[in-house]
Length: 287
Picture (cartoon, rainbow, N blue to C red):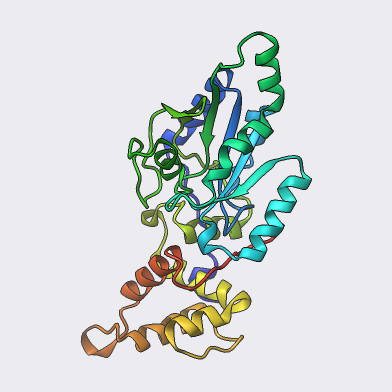
């Protein structure tokens, strides 16, 4: 068995424990919560600890990066969340697609809050929402789009936002940004893998070749044509991840001294291209 099959992805730096406490303490300041999930892995990108922390606060779910997720799968997820009592919309925070539905979604989810404010003669009181999500799900891109500016830090690197920040986005809505927070242990190894695939776990804590091999094995089972079309190769169901990585390295001419394949370079390329949606619109899990 190749070594990469045995290794487990885990990442919980110290500042995330602090963030978890900050979220709990700040809940009294907000009327509801905006939770950003990655549309490619809506289940794996949900922090299971947040339900017990948020409790009964109204919640709006944004399935972000829907532009690189399978459209049919996204529709299935939207129905799943609706059936479970959540207000959910599919968005792409980079381009702003779908965010025109956000204000309506907020007022639907916070209907009771709005009615309560009106009864108290405070109909114009701003609705205050906490923005939460694991690292690299697009919280800063979302806030910048809503602010129509670049007020929040944006990066493709996990763990950029470190402090709570308030933003007035107009139309009587204020957003409280929070740093991305994971949970202490991924009980399911596949969840850790998927979080690493999309960049929610820092690349520095994973082995790039391991990550590429696992991603290729996962795609070879569910979307083999995505690999074949992207790299113009043919693969069979019995190929293991490192064998597919080798084929891609040869095809792209990633060679080092002595004609050996530069596995590191090929692995970095594969991760970057998957995150950028160059494999096509792919969703890695369904409800």
